[in-house]
Amino acid sequence: MTYDEAIAFIHGTYKFGSKLGLENIKTLLERLGSPHKALKFIHVAGTNGKGSTSAFIHSVLIDAGYKTGLYTSPFIETFNERIRVNHQLITSDELAQLTGQVKRAIDVMLSEGYNHPTEFEVVTAIAMLYYQMHVCEVVVLEVGLGGRLDATNVIDTPLVSVITPLDFDHTEYLGNTIEAIATEKSGIVKKDGITVTCPQALGAMGVIEKKCHEMDNRLYKVAFDTLEITHQDFGQLTFNYLGASYDITLFASYQAENATLAIETLNVLIRHHGFKITPDQIKSGLKKAQWIGRLEIVSRHPFIIIDGAHNLHGIKGLAKSIEALGKEHRIIGLVGILKDKDVDGMLATITPYLDAVIITKPDNPRAMTAQELTMHFHDVDIISVCESISDAMKALYAHHSALENNAEKTLYLAFGSLYMIGEVRALAIKHNK
Image (cartoon, rainbow, N blue to C red; front, side):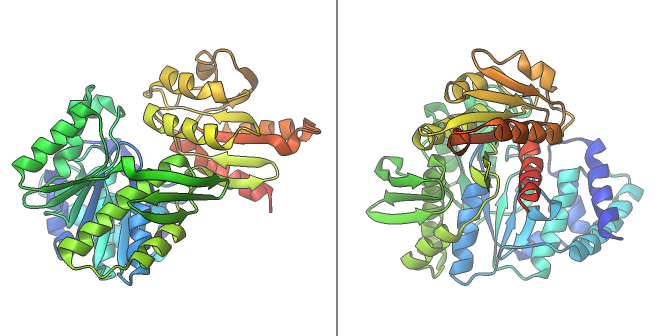
């Protein structure tokens, strides 16, 4: 099997939907020799911040000398981003080889009358084989959707269960109350484990506490009230937490909260699992952490930033960062959003910070067309309406070329969907070569 054939096979399983449940993934992994049984995990669930928090933990563990896997979704530019060890992405040859192995196991399952695994189940199986093959000492495992019935929840009790901020997203699968969402997310809490979470809405925290009590988990809560951002600019954020100062290059305001959640998770590994991680290694690892697509500068001329904010909670975090950083800039939004999001709530939160917008359509079947999205904008100038991201970027460059004295004080901010910002990123980088 070639790399292209592997990608075609993986994406071809999209038609099998997102059937939530663990029987299929259990059966598939058994056919593959149960590679997950040979691994230790840090399991990360939540609505926002999962990827960045996982990246911080991954970076520190590598700095401390541990061979560490990282599993995330979705990807921004290349599929291989989803599966990595010690910052290195799975190679195309490895992905092709392991996909072929998984496909053969699926063929056996189908001959025995089982359902075809979903795309996420297939990718999860590939990842487990990859981490086993590379003899990872620990894997930072990000949940795909929810937690309780997510394919990643096939693992036994992890070293730590981590729950990032909870809010409303994917309500058609997870429920339309914060308590229902917390019930699904806290499904990663397993018997006799340890759970770390951040401050949550009262209803959500009550669910998490109850689940931890039922499963005999020790629960650690991050003390955000001791967190203070002391410096922030385009490229660096400094914060104090529990008497220590940390520098990170992920400079969005919300990254300080993600970093403190990572710090508390690492402290659990030190206190309860004997990991040898020094305070200097925590500081160094946090500073080295990179995570593309989260308030990331992808061009200086013109000044373009992309952010993966794609739900109301994420947009609130983005607005907080722009309020802190963008006062000297005229901000032009490049916006595309999926139909199943709280579009009006998102735009009501962010448009007060925008001077004008370029509207486009993310490359996803669930995307709202650019014309549909225009109907949700009020009291903000619309520069252009483009049904393709490439046309939206052409409109951005045309707008910038027409500027004179204000060119250096204009910031273009692309946000609204993870399925959009990867193409914006690639086009911006290509334009600057």
